[in-house]
Image 1 (cartoon, helix red, strand yellow):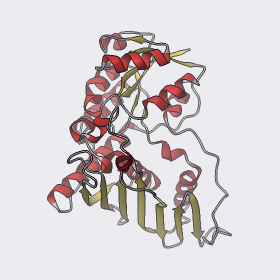
Image 2: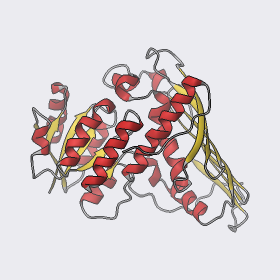
Image 3: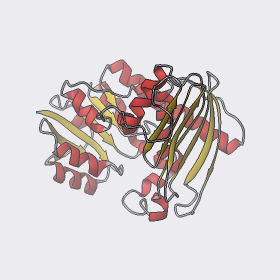
Image 4: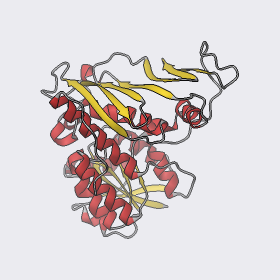
Length: 337
């Protein structure tokens, strides 16, 4: 049995993670810590775990191999640094940090400790995304000129963040609003599809939308110019009843669109890829969420997200928000140490 700890249960994905843990025969949670003692007790009760009165009870317990961090984002660093120092493997919910500085410090500590890391970019495992990445790598799109990613839902319209998850609509605790919260998934996919080609410059605008959560942004649009000249656009929001066009890729030899969860693929280099009917010759889905972390702990093949990639998403979104405030193109830096 592999024993873990849960440090913070604030994230909206925590209930789903608890359900997943309970379905994994080789995984158990020994400790739960949260600054909110009632929340810690609830999570511990569901997991059959003990409540830690101090987080360092977890770091000093040699039987705990890894830690799942689902706290408010502004508490990540105070949990990640001692966990890494104690050589605990880490799953940290996205975004990794509040911005580039704390994300860089955490990435450095995790790399120095040589522990396993994963985060919640679960969309990498979908059959369509795996297929498209392979097609790009094989050159079947030719030179890609344009990308568009969109991740939107109706969270603000439906009041998803009114009660238990209210902190997620408070940028002082979350580090961002809707644009960063959902947009980081789309940014991750765009950079992952393009083999981590860096962002040369970017510009964005964000808006409050309904005003349900004060001055927290509820939607945003951005443009990114990659260092190879590719132009990418990035949309995200909590004020959308639908998100029909989630991805578009346009190249000199190929084109792809995901429309209403159906992939339409055209390529001059792939027989039968005429783009008129949904493309169904796709690989099987693979684990890409928290199950990947558990697979890795169990010694199974697992496509973990490198921590430097997770930190770079913070770097780019910090630049996107800065550009929105200043109304000008901004140049993202590198992951700081």
